Length: 490
Ligand SMILES: NC(=O)C1=CN([C@@H]2O[C@H](COP(=O)(O)OP(=O)(O)OC[C@H]3O[C@@H](n4cnc5c(N)ncnc54)[C@H](O)[C@@H]3O)[C@@H](O)[C@H]2O)C=CC1
Ligand SMILES: O=C(O)[C@H](O)CS(=O)(=O)O
Image (cartoon, rainbow, N blue to C red):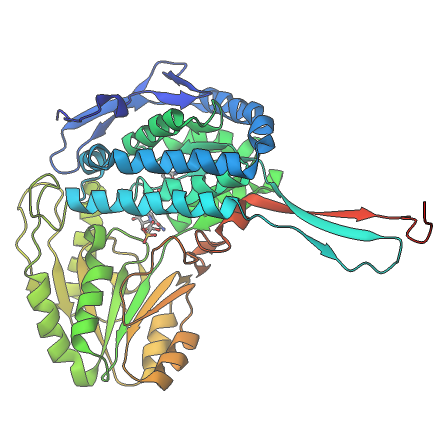
């Protein structure tokens, strides 16, 4: 496909290392396709460990000057980056839709969402405070302050090609850390366009690096280098655990945003219109390809039929097609393997007694999954224990609150959970009873820059965004001053 941009300079088919746009040392390239039709958008360097080590060295060399800038100077550069991102939102959205597939309006929404992290952390970077701790002796003072952790490796997934980069890079840069970014090999062009704008904003050479290509060699170099002091990763739990192990020898700081299996619970005393709207927002955002999508929908007996009917009216109105086609609300899945996984989940559920209750129309060819409501879902089905990562809404039935919590918590994951009730007492019982890092009552959206984002159990480590997000890139130093002559007037 030919990508038409107002600013063609945003579309780069090179890696960005040490302030230079360059090819891989071995000159190999990796093609990137459009999920809607499989056409090739372009190619990027298939970088290897040597290229990655050059990026790490460039970042390490740039670190002293970057950390020596005042917090305000770094924040000013982030503000300029923020302004440039918003000024190029249309082109950035077109690049994202071309490589990730989401409808153009949704891609533009992600760019706006991604920009909020840059704005938020430009502000947070100006308020990295220290303190003084009351000392045990009259001649001692104890001061503390925060320092940047150092060169930070950023590995991001294909489902949010812009927001996952800014949610990690903005706090890192604000804290004084240079970054080496490895975007998904499926969606590198959005990351490269953000690098173009970072360069235009004046972020110095070596501070912001993007290494493209297949992941294994790059990942081994990033996790093995002693110069890399921090790894921030978003993706599957399987890969997150692998990278965590690879970081063990050099004891790196870790931020891991991993897989989920979010329950969504509709109680008899819910406002069903709110519950249906929130289910649509959580389940079908990004065609169901988010780690916080409702994966299991638990509906209490008394409202099961009415909720299913109301949800069916909304699901059948979804419009499935290529992201560049006006009016589409559900785009293609990222690749053939994703389509196969969704189909396997549906087939497995049907073989174990589930029924198709409602479906939207969808193209019969291409990487499109059909938005589907299944009734009669049960906990022995694959979709009850695995992330479907597609537009399938399985409805499970439950009788009482205890049973709902037991089903909801019966998973090694604990990222997000949603529930709907108008009862205040139940609201606090359930919010405290759900095993998740993020819990939502009577809403379906939880991803925003001011709120901590992260999970418990096998859904990850740390929190991104919010009042603590910048701490992921800071170390606390304690400074002890002893022997002070406080009783001798000079
Ligand atoms: N928690 C979340 O936000 C996300 C969860 N997922 C889950 O992961 C599943 C697979 O999706 P993927 O994008 O393939 O996730 P993934 O975990 O395989 O890939 C995520 C990132 O890690 C990189 N990566 C993969 N193997 C690596 C290695 N050995 N060393 C270094 N980097 C490596 C990939 O290139 C990508 O940049 C999805 O079906 C979904 O269940 C996927 C994306 C986001
Ligand atoms: O990887 C993901 O799915 C994102 O973290 C989801 S969100 O933060 O954009 O909601």
